[in-house]
Image (cartoon, helix red, strand yellow):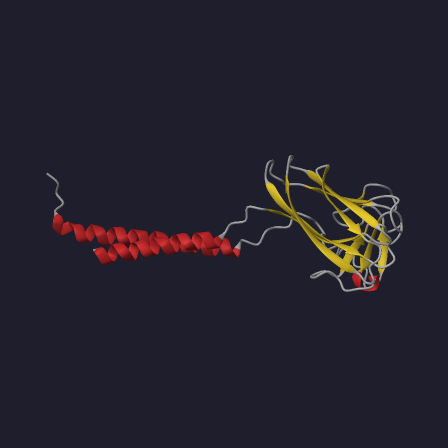
Length: 228
């Protein structure tokens, strides 16, 4: 015969409700911690081309001297511009950009490491058209695969920016990200501006979901207490 009788039932019901409430509080703590770490990590080095600083002008830098980036088409380096000299405002949150047509039609690339095979990543960047560029095209590739192409109409009266965002999947732990000016289009020394380059994992924790779960558990705990 069981040693527990009906007189013990309220005690066990209260303990069960307390356990659910304790679990809910723990989940709330996890939600708070997830919220604090929810900012995705940008895997791109020098995505705003802040280095090297060109002050209020522009400069062309030899390969190996711009952190994260290399001109993989030719050896005429990478041009970095202060956006204010290009005929318009800088892209939000930036002051500088790389010009794919710095001296001629260039390709700038960065090798991204630490990727997870099969993982989806969010790739984003801002593409700038500047006056006097002529009709131009920039091809963006990730892991050797074309992500998209950006186009400049060549008729912009002032510097204009277009924000791009795409999902890409890593097929290796290391992938090459490239921005390539299409040769033969437009002015070979003006245009195809790139800045705000970012690559982040798409599976950032969602604190809101944890918060909903914890709220439901708290509600269940209170309901059980009420019945008790």
